[in-house]
Image 1: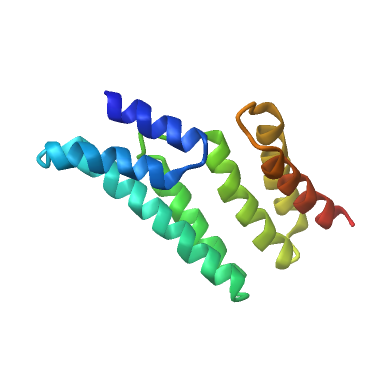
Image 2 (image 1 turned 180 degrees about the horizontal axis):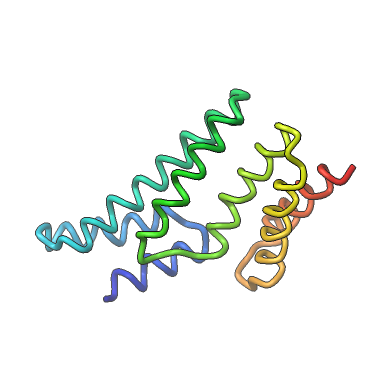
Length: 141
């Protein structure tokens, strides 16, 4: 399905809002498409979950932020679109929250994945690559 390809391409680039727009475009012309509606709802839930997690973590509620991230990651299993780059963004948030709670080994495990994915992904911007490295170095200090 073309919508899946377009949404997946947007997710690979970490552009969740663009992925949502692919689904919205299809639903505009085919509002009864149950599979597209389901995927669109899941994607919106994932985006909303990440926004809620970020808010909790920013306010210092790391435990609650981690719970929300874990719920969000389980919702991602139902998505047809997924990307390692987007997953690395989620795991970067998780690693930072875990580090703040002195769960350094768990944080390093997640940040190792982030760094690896971002080093191997040619579409990953240098800024994103540096972000993962910085987070990992902060824990190792």
